[in-house]
Length: 425
Image (cartoon, rainbow, N blue to C red; front, side, top):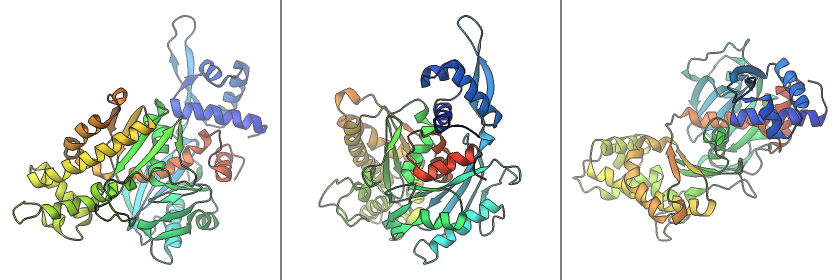
């Protein structure tokens, strides 16, 4: 697509607005972006010609002619998202409009010397359409010969990433220190690669497809193996000076508390992460609790946590007490974060939400009691969860890039935008 840098930025701004607030008329675009109607007409015509925008239904008018609304074409591009965990990878292929075209998983050992090669192998298997070494979670709905153009790869990791365009990762749970994930993948795949903390990646997805369409200031909290938070302020994910903002799980609760995985004592995660819940269950076991053996085993893991949740749902008092106590701890910590950040809404996500009714018993009264008086009516919304949501968040890193006129993704973002507008093969 030909055009000046200014023209390209304006096209990006049009895509950004439609991508985050949904379909608008040309008049609304001109007003929101402070552009002349003639400029909007010209640029939207170009974007439609390149298959990126389409005319939708007519918007009713209070007087005069109804306005034609414009919306994004999902088939204009797609991205691959990868969620890295301590024992497996989840990969998804996602269109620009958020539709998932396919999902896969495979075993993964992050401590292996060949870990990054295995990560690249998994991505290549999806890109090529071979699926070699992967297990399909859903049947792919797109023929790779007819699929939208691939804009890039997004990778979500449970750790800190100073610069998502560079992609150097520090993740204790993966035993990664200064791991050059972005550099290695770009060299191998010859594609734009963005790497980000997995909770921040979820916030990017919320900004595009979820609560972020109607809220510019919100919190995303995740509960599961760990505890995380992402802060979205004025429509942007706040990353901090070194990309480490949002380590909510390491808010200190009690200096004499249990040892956390980070090495400190009494962190929030040590109480409400999966290991903390199972430890609390073992502490309550006196031979008559009725808690499942998997929950009481030293290495209970995900089986133990699901068993603990099932016991609680079935009415076991000890299991219900574990979740209620953890919910109260989480509620108090969440209230503190809300009081500091002052979001419009809080979105709770993660594997732990499967047992949210058990958490809620302790969480709701604790969070409301500790909130500043003017904030006690804040909406706290719990969303349904699937493991592929993590990988969809990673894909959103790439899919959000064309909507980021500020250029937070750096050179990798420029490459993604170039692929979208067809100036790069």
